[in-house]
Image 1: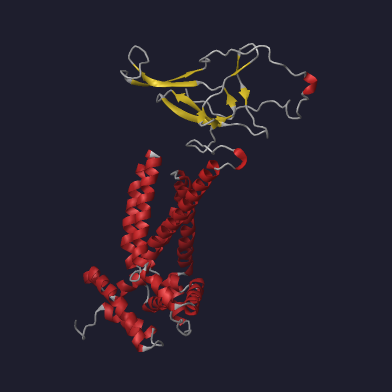
Image 2: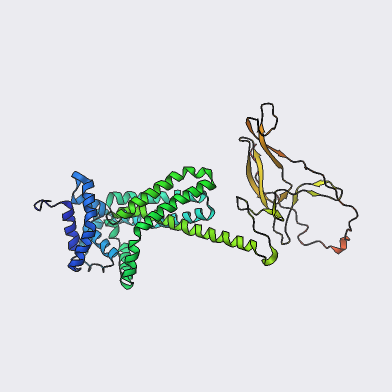
Length: 415
């Protein structure tokens, strides 16, 4: 390394040293020794384009980079300057784009955490579609920091205030504890990758359509493992690692909440409190009707003469509709599909199988998918005679007994 032609790293570090001049010399040397390998690696990547301007584009100005090193190391902020450099920087880059990039990151962190939490609670893909509203904001913020770097953002008043607050908090806390947590950063990035992969696999097991999402989860896992260790050298990677970390934290909290809820339901159902049976639900979250330990998919009612009744609506003693999931055949695919949920019975019986070329249902040797709805009653009921019938006066009508049955809210299948 020639001393007559100093490299970009030496020039950049010289300005960083000047910005840290108020700190003890031994501590300044320790800080520079920590960041020097990262800067040297970055200089090697730039090759012939390794100039101070290129480093500033990646890391921001040496002064702002020094301020970030102060905050991460728990050192007090530098005494206030005249502000001329800040004013010139704002005039050159504009404060609007920097502020949008910063608050875009904050908005993205909240959105990623929220939708990750919702997706983990229900183990469904649908909540993740909400990220489509967050992604454009994050993309614009990323485009800004790639072009302008993080220096304009570091000079924002709210960022300066936030950095001062963080430094004050660190100064009032046990430095050993904070140092210990900093040593756990590599393990955190590995944990993030593991959670993303496991979460993607769970979504695929729950919904086969989520297989298209699995490559994105794997890509995010690789990205966070790559970007995490490089944050100290390139602060622009915060716009990649922080939203992914927020998504992981949200999904972990959502998964923990779902597990606690499941354990509570099982414990409540297995106990004898109140004499209630276990709380059973189908795959769509609707409660199932149970007779003893067996689920009831359909209900048939008969009058006193043994004639089947249709269009009956079931309610419990508190007037709540006993609604369950309704299924029907889809003509276009020949598959059994969910079409809604209601408390109207009896339902059509769904027969599934395959149909051969002559239209016969055999279930094994056919060629086309087959699904048929049958509305007949599959059995006859023998109504016992001679049961005592209470007089009409002994059973006054309830105020709600004359209410008309509500219409079904199920959606009829497409024919």
